[in-house]
Length: 553
Ligand code: ATP
Ligand code: MG
Ligand code: MG
Image (cartoon, rainbow, N blue to C red; front, side, top):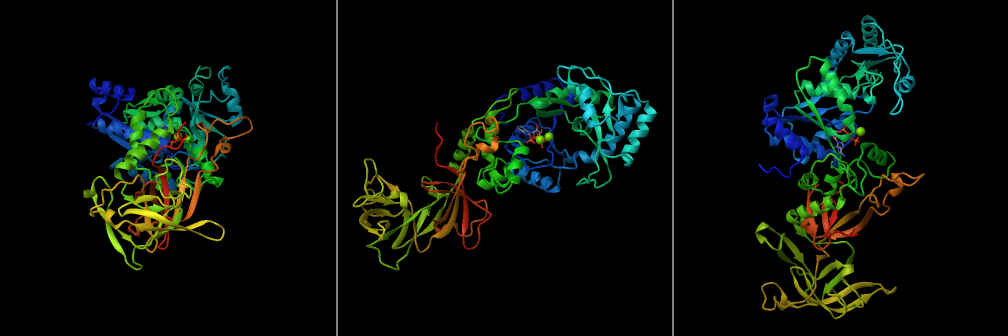
């Protein structure tokens, strides 16, 4: 298999396998919390976890980390699975929910209490925070820290039975209130939440904290390498401490790597949620969102997202990846895979004056000019055509090889036309070009090889389909949208021109009935993807990306 560039996690796993640790087993997991949609940052974690498992002949579990009933929902559980599959990964029979372990997690908590390693604290949340101290100030012990095992067990069971209100008590690990690492200062491991859980309903009113649930879930699933992002580095001692106290089956090890950050992009779920809730985008799958659902709708391919993740690799240091790397990967893949069709964004009428009215010829036009074997489609040619308004200039300037009065240009797949006459309306606006087609320059004719410098695209006015083209650009117009000056937020960095709607574009009829998600190149313009808002009467297409980088610095 192609191993790709080396990274420190691969090296760690290689070492473990070579030394026969855990019988050479490599089990990883991808553990999303079902409280939002997956984004490009998650893609990095998915590629890494599933990728390492595949590379070492192990397996990768999909585990929903659903320990916080307040923010989680089945809608997200479904969407997450769809997005992982779309990205190209498969968890097989290994789908798990942390909530499946609620009973076991509870039993382990009682075991901790019995071992004198956990106690029920009755301080208020504010008091707990104050007692814990901070980086500069040592913590102080809670007055409830020395409760007896019996009293702790009794209180914990009554917490579980629903006898107390939220915040009245918490269960805390009993570690070291003076520990240099604040995460080790008797961290809370269970809290009361009287909330309905999307899977366990009202069966529970105590819920485990992330740090407590995650390591035990890893152990129960016999995960070997628990890959997570850098902000959990300081939590690793707690991860190890909890597992060391308990008689759990597995022997997992936490390894941290840097989050993916992209320039011109905000990635965190919290901020993405804000954009959705404030109506600044149309939803989680707005094509400008860095969510997998948004990128899919925009026309990005899973291959290009995987290619980006592969290219940025895995590191121990947080950094910023240039978004043009992603755009480049998309453009490269679309260039290789997208059929070429002709569409016109700003139509201008062009009449072929020497073409009989009512005569229609269907051209057999290749989808890929350099490889006709990849297929062709019928393109109608009639007397009245539409060309791109931008391809005509009344006053030709130096280097202008497109249309202007008296000038010649090649119409793609047709032949050479000369602009004989320019028709204007009363306001002086150009409304029609009257052109003659050099019949001898048509494909297969003796003059077909005659050269002119410009080639332009067109559609048949009578056959073209109406299209709404949504032209997307970057959602933010600064490199680091999270950095905002005093009194401003990332929302002030939004690009006001991230969406331009062209309501009356036209495309050749071969696109009729194209299913949602169809990707094509509108020749000379950009890559587009058919949107689900399309109707019988009107296609809606999203501009995935332009033909070249227009954001050159
Ligand atoms: P967010 O900050 O967007 O809410 P999260 O880490 O809270 O992300 P989870 O659903 O808990 O979201 O994440 C599932 C997995 O994805 C975790 O292992 C997490 O480390 C990883 N992950 C999240 N964001 C990124 C990122 N930007 N780069 C790499 N991995 C990420
Ligand atoms: Mg999380
Ligand atoms: Mg989060």
